[in-house]
Amino acid sequence: MLIEASRIAGGASGKGGGFIAEWATPKPLASLSFNLHNQLAKEHNGSKTWGYRNVSAAEIRLQGRNLPDKKLDAGDSSHLKVKSPSALDWLLPGSVQKYNEIGTPSDSGQVNPLVFTTTIAQLAEERGVKIIIGSALRINYDGDAVSSVTYISGDKTHTLMVTDLVVAAGPWTPKLLPKVRLLTPRGHSVIAKSSRALSPYILFPNIEPVPNSTFKYLISPDIYPRPPDEVHEFHTVYSSGPDGYEVPLPADTNSVEVDEEKCEEVWTAMSSVSQEIHDGQVITKQACYKPQIRKHEETEEVGPMVGPVGPRGLWLATGHDEWGIQNAPATGLVMSEMIFDGKAYSANCETLDPKHFLSDLAVLKPELVKVNA
Image (cartoon, rainbow, N blue to C red; front, side, top):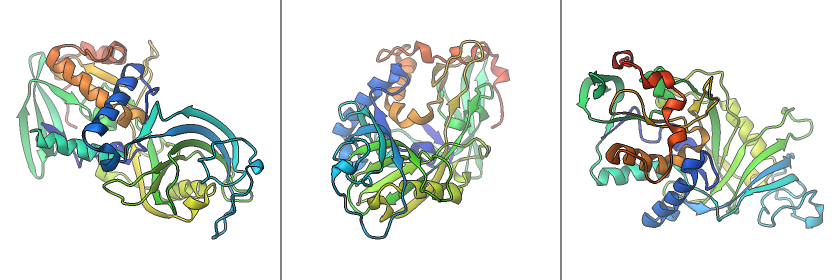
């Protein structure tokens, strides 16, 4: 049974970029999860359903320009200041200042997170999982073991008896487990319809602002061209801007506010390096919060945290930061092995054990965990 506070994929799991890589972090999950993404895509036609495909990826430095309404002539490749793949013909001639390939189709890919997450949830329902839209209020205990969870759905409060409870509430995890210390940055992104299909390159750029523009600083909006999927029948481009820590975490994903100015900054930057993007149309402006693990004061360990927490039957899976979609399949697999088999067999997750980050929580008395969220 799954209790979801607002809606499936209402947060970062539906608004992220969807980049996946065999070389992602953390190492115990990355390769396993990348392979599971490939397996899931083959079994459920992910290339058509949730836009799964292999891609190239690069860190790149670009020079933004004021663009006309008419497409520029690509010209001779000798005008390029730095050599870059010919497939990146949707970048402006001469805009590439630096190019560093970090991923190839053999070890990098992408999915549409919204469609991927909602499709997996639907497949789970078809196999008997019950999804409840409701907010968890309290974890209840019987001695040193978890016994139930109290939640509110609609205007009614319910108590669900459990033997095992996995808390995977992302940035909202501390509402149920206050000892879990998370940073909760908010990031903005836009989705635009491009004027044509763009080659499968995921770019992590630094963009020099257009001379005499209102932007006097580098802006780094990740750029993800996407193929058609079950939500969009046309090619789109996803782009996200830098994270900010100034706005506190709201009550739930339905209460996340979107800063129009930050979305406009992302659009202005991304559309200054490509005529095909410039000639497109913004169709979505959005924001979401991510769960970032604070470094442990003594061990300097960073997350995510995956494993048992204190009372028997209480499990934690959170703190995946920007690699949430990437590591979701492996996290689900190793958590199921821990719960049903007593140990994770598919990956060595010892370094992800919450005890490395929350040593005080491992010996916490159950009554101290009983809180209202």
